[in-house]
Length: 121
Image (cartoon, rainbow, N blue to C red; front, side, top):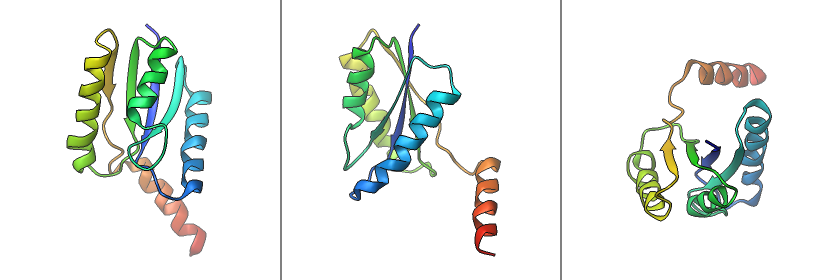
């Protein structure tokens, strides 16, 4: 089974914001053993999630894992993203689509925060 990963950001009206997403995509590509890794945005930027799913399916992926880059378990995580994924499942019934959990209050995130605080202390 060929597995594709889509890192899903919120998106931003500022064009430079997409650079962080592109950097994360490259890091996941180099650190994982996935057949396909791409970025997408929920709002404001392209590709959006449906376009990114279409690209993954066109690239021959049998499974697509959506990885939301969201800190909180808010409306986007509980409602918006699952609804989009359910619509995409209808378009591509032969493709398995899954969504990971949100980032949350992970210990590793706290370590990054402590590093950032240390930069200014």
